[in-house]
Length: 66
Image 1 (cartoon, rainbow, N blue to C red):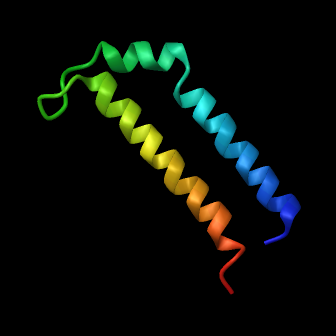
Image 2 (cartoon, rainbow, N blue to C red):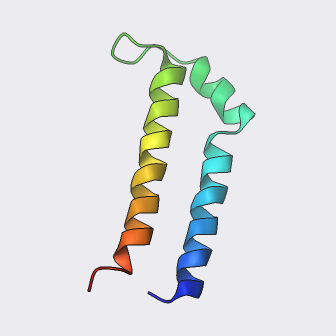
């Protein structure tokens, strides 16, 4: 993968993270029912966090393995 494409994808993941962790969406998630007996906000935050890490790892590692 070219460096320019990788940079664009990393910026896209950053913007996705900003959108998913922005206040209006967090307020909607917080008002929902509990998930697996846990507060929905914590489940959402850790799920988004883990998803962003996986996306970043895929983008960064995809270009190095041939």
